[in-house]
Length: 301
Image (cartoon, rainbow, N blue to C red):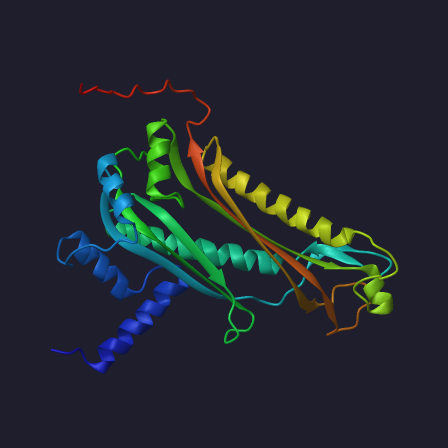
């Protein structure tokens, strides 16, 4: 019997309340619980045949393909940074950085929830897709996908997320190194050259020269993001981070200039925004050497 529209509306309202708290919709939770209890049919996985077979050799129990998603509205963008006497601006757009970090955290948390509901204690092959859309001006979207597994060797209390392939996961396990979690950070820096305020020009075409402010922005964004990632690794008591991936983008953007000295209320500041996204897998045990395991070879002569 089909459910009444009133029940559907009630369920949607409850699901929206759960999403607001960073949790999963009711329908997703029901499906995963049914799968865990053996009532939801066969499992799905985004692993290749080779990865799936290797996972079985490693002792991993493949459970389900899991996902986490978050579409996030970026708030009023101000910046904390320095303002030069010549009208130059340099600093981090903390609101934008925090939006990326919070959206990614919510998406990964939801994926970990799905893995836990399916009976898993780890997710391998986490793939993170992020972007911005014309239909959601001022918004960002993150979607993460992976395969939930039950790893008998995992020692962590929480679901262990890793963007490593099953092959790399197996290599670390064989070397006595334990993946302990996915670490990530984003940093967004705003740069406006001093000459822009005076002549409203981006570049000085009089001579060849390095645009020092923009180079400095890339370095500042990288050091900020990497510093946060290594801080997360320390909280996980990891020895280091492997498989570090750095993505960066550069584009024009306007921010509210109300806090900039000499600016009028409602005035906009136009400049270059450098954005860096850093992800990697924190590992433990990499500081200890382990003797190589001998391979048994039998010559059939």
